[in-house]
Amino acid sequence: MKSVPTAGLAHIQIARAATIEAALSADPDIDSTAIEIRMLGPVVRLEGYITNAADRDKAISLATMIVGWENV
Image (cartoon, rainbow, N blue to C red; front, side):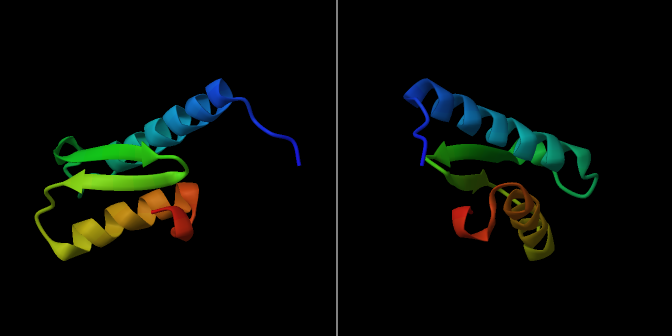
């Protein structure tokens, strides 16, 4: 297995966070300005305020499609 340099990992994390942010912003039902996306290694942490459980589940689902269920 080939290792990825630390700078490469940071780039991957930034790209994943940006992809999740774009997906959340594109969804008209979710107020993405109220959600902060944090990358903790390969794990995504979504923090903020959502108006209802359905929007929370939708935000988690979008992030899961990008990084996988084990990383959200």
